[in-house]
Structure formats: C-alpha cells, structure tokens
Image (tube, rainbow, N blue to C red):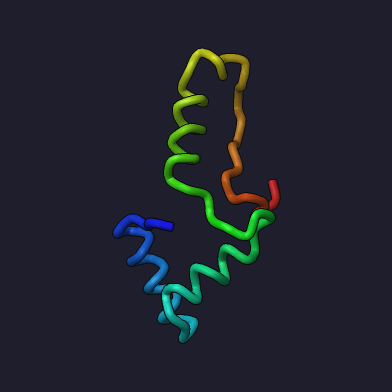
Length: 73
C-alpha cells in the first residue's frame, strides 16, 4: 500500500521505539483491524466528502470511526 511521507515518518518513529522495522510495525497495526489492512487515504477522502455533502445533512454530532474496527466507538 502506498503511504504518504507523514505516515512513513510516524510509523518509522513508532517502529524504532518498538525495536522493529517500519514494515513490521505496519503489519502489526494492520493485523489488529477486522479487515487486516489499514484505511486508505482514498477511503478517508470519500468519507470526508460524504460527511461534507448534503447527503449527510441529517447527521448531527456524529463521530466517524475509520479504524476498520481496531478502535471501539
């Protein structure tokens, strides 16, 4: 999966703290989701566009969880 520079940097810092490679850290985090992968930037952008659109006008005070199940609401 392509990652942005910021994701690479953050994953690299966390991986270093854990004493593992960035790729190993990525796999560890992905393995904790229901789909065994991380949310893509395109998926996040699609949700943001929907939430900003008139189609979501009935939603109020809503938190959108894009963690693929790794975080409970």
